[in-house]
Length: 231
Image 1 (cartoon, rainbow, N blue to C red):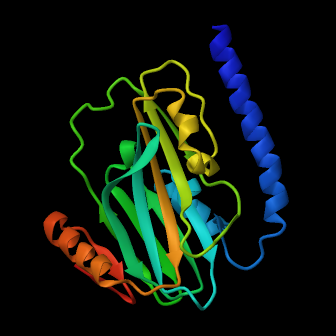
Image 2 (cartoon, rainbow, N blue to C red; image 1 turned 120 degrees about the vertical axis):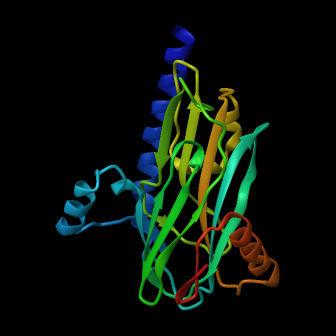
Image 3 (cartoon, rainbow, N blue to C red; image 1 turned 90 degrees about the horizontal axis):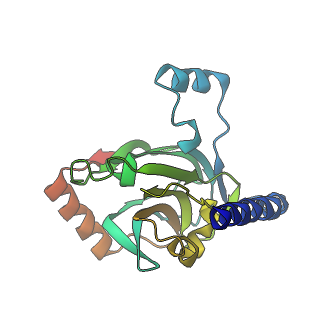
């Protein structure tokens, strides 16, 4: 019991210290960033009408004219390292401002991404066959991006991290700890997942386009490419 309380105390302390640092960093982020969406009252009413559970899953982003593509990646923690799960979702993208919405179930099953920007509006999904009752009886803790974060091209930004475990206590960290997977590995949770977004100033290469085609054909997913939807 004392050990559990100690771990929880350390977790809270880490969250508090990181929160203070993030507040200082936010003041220096001006041009390229991603942040929790600032919703209008009308938008809040619509979300409330549809259940009101995903307001924190919507993000505003601001880029510059160099952006050429966007990537969404999902991972599972395996032996203290992030291992990709499912196929990378990527698309050509050139708008400097927009909104990104993320919706998912436990284990990031039935992941759905919606994009709204000046020239690109649409959504795509990535489904997987999760074993029935795989997480039955387990607790779920999900951390979401909560601070304004600088966008650096070719660098992944964690949007959400989810812990699913049968343990009685969960020491959850802010998503910035994606860079320190060893911190999650310390607790030996059964399942730890992460989802990230990465903006790039490079055009989609042939391998990316081929992966999109194969995934779309095999899983019947919908992907937003450029200014329209392709199926």
